[in-house]
Structures are given as structure tokens and as C-alpha cells.
Image (cartoon, rainbow, N blue to C red; front, top):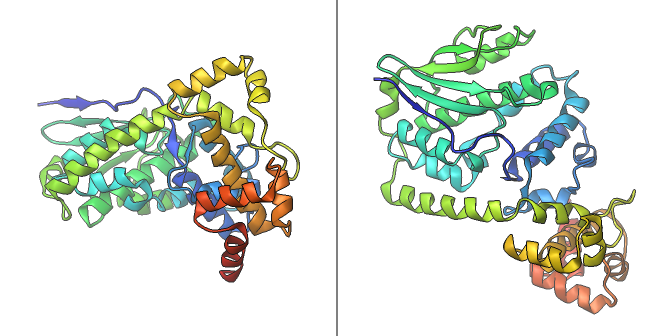
Length: 353
């Protein structure tokens, strides 16, 4: 009996956590590429990568991927495979915990497809169950052509890695096919798939014996699974509230000057840049579940941490650059954000170097 399950999203343009960008920036750093070059043109600065609740839109991650290609593709031809192997269950936060606590691999796959907008994928998988084979069709039609092959390699490798983590052993594939021509690093792809892949095929896909799907997962836990499902539903709701207008405002609040340390724009200026009145902007942000003040605090905190860590600016100078009239107001706000004064934060970061 044939059964097909489509993903719960229609394209890759969904809001996502920042962990994938942090992973790629960390990888590039190992090969001497500074975080600033990896984040160029994104509106992100390095301290934002450490925020577990940080959210970005897909085009921001895509910009980081293009930066990664520009910096390392010539030196690391198997870049997609190497990046993909770094995605583990823990990379995905509560989404990963929900998968690992699922009763079976079949249940984990069905859950992952339903909540695919909690992943970092650009290629959209469609699952097909049949009597003799389970096939994951990996669609790349809407992925930009300049990074398509890399993202197919990254996403297929990451899917394989995560399912292997769920099983507690390498995922035994029966087929692996790719729509692109055979690359020079085909042997690296074969290491991942465990079989000889075929290239220049009509579709991207990998297949496994369906008998594996219903075997209990080693870390299955019904109570944990139910709790994670509830948290994933809440997380999806929150992320959807932080896309659209909220994401546009945050980008406009991040300074665009050469040093990246000018005071964030005021609400009237942001509203003007978005071609709307200040009142309309406030109403749109309220409907999105946030506010100009909340977004301003988010950006100010990231900029403050960057200046205190990476520059010799005094606390007073940092306050001025962030738009505070008095240092005491900035110190109070920073302690509210981090639990430490700016001076204590700077000493703690310096002691870790």
C-alpha cells in the first residue's frame, strides 16, 4: 500500500532559529574566515549568534551560505557534505528532542515533516511509504541555482546524520540518487550514504528498507515526546509572530555604518523607511506580538555585548553610541538584560580569552 506525506510547509522561506548560521560561522572560523565576513550583508553581528531564542528569516541564512561559498568553496569542494555532517540532534533544540523521543523512526519522520519549519532545510522532503521501500524525495526546484547543489548535499547529509543519531547507528540506505552531475568529491558523498550514489538522475532521493521505520527508537519516551510536541507547537506560533514586519524593523535597527556601532534608528525614522506612519508601525508590531521597544532592546543588547567585548570603548562611550542620554540608564538596562553590569560583563569575557 502506497502512502505519501508532504511537508507542512510549501517552500523554504520560513523564519528559523539562528543555530544553523552559528554552526556555519563556527565552521568557517576553523579555516580562518572571520565572523564579520560570514555575516556581511545580513544585519547580524556575532553576539546575536549566541542567543538561543534568536530568529532570522531564510534569506538571511541564504546570505550567510553565499558568503560561505565565496570564502571556502574553492578550498573545500565538499563544503556541503562537511557542513551537513555537523548538524546533529542537539543543533535543532526542542525539535530535535521531539524527534529523539519519538516512539519509532516512522513517527519521528512524520513529526519532522509536520513541523519542518523548525528545521533549517532549504530542500523540501516528501516521504513515500510502499510495501518494499521507503523513499525520501528531496525537492530542490525552488532553491536558488547558485547554491542548489551545495544545499542538496548539506540537507541530504544532515537528514542522514540526524536519522542515524535517532537510530543510534548509521542509517542503512538502499538507494541514493542526485539530479546534479557527478562531482569530483563523489567519494565523500558515498561515505555519507554508505552506498554508491547515482548522479545525473531525474530527482534527488534516498531510500531505506521500510522495516526499519517501525523499530522502537533507543531513546523513545512517551511523556517527553508529548511535552516536546506541545513546546514545538508553541515555538512555531512564536516564530511566525517574529517574521514579516518585526524582522524588517530589526534589520533597520542594526546600524549600517562602517563600524557597525552607530545608535539604532528611532521609531519615526524606521516607520519612514517602511513607508508608513509611526502609528501604523506600532499597530503592525502589536499584531505581530512584539513592539519597537522590545526589538530595540534586542539590538541594543547585541551591540552592547559586541562593543564591550571587541572594543576599548568606555561604558560611557558605549552608552552614547547606543543612544542613551546617561550612562546610568544604560547600566540599568544592561543589568536587566544580562544580570551583570557592563564592567563586570567585560571583565568576565576578558578572563575567558
